[in-house]
Amino acid sequence: MEKEGFTIAQMDTLLNKQSGLLGISGLTNDMRDLLAEEQRTTTAAPTLPCRSFVHRIRKYIGAYLAEMNGADAIVFTGGIGENSATIRQRVCQQMEWFGLHLDQGTEQQHREAEPRHASAPRTHGFTPTLSRPTKNC
Image (tube, rainbow, N blue to C red; front, side):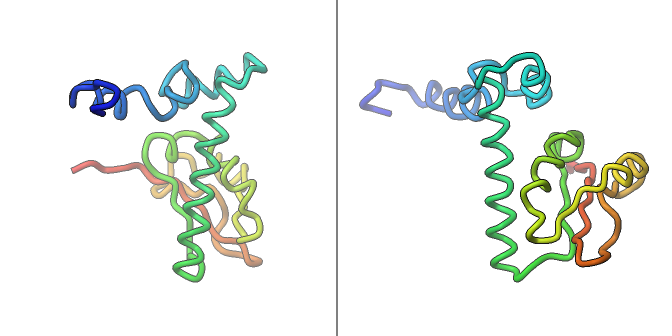
């Protein structure tokens, strides 16, 4: 911070407002906009942050699965987890080894249910996935 001559306020802005999805893409910090832009263009600007985001989710799920020796369910929550079927699908796509399977029909059918099921209950070795609204206190 001192070397670059940043004030505390400038460093706070850099880390909390200009990094993450925006810092990687140079476009926006909104995943909805990045996914839409990904459909419109073949450039890496929207693709790289989306892929990085999914990679990090998978990495953390894998780490927790190893620490907890498995899981009874995977719950997607928060703005992106709850509302982005595309992100849930991409995360689950690379987690079949664990039995994660996103059932598109079940996810659509239960879109308004509480909690929202993204897959059928545990059957044939599959781990259920759910999306759940976040309730801030």
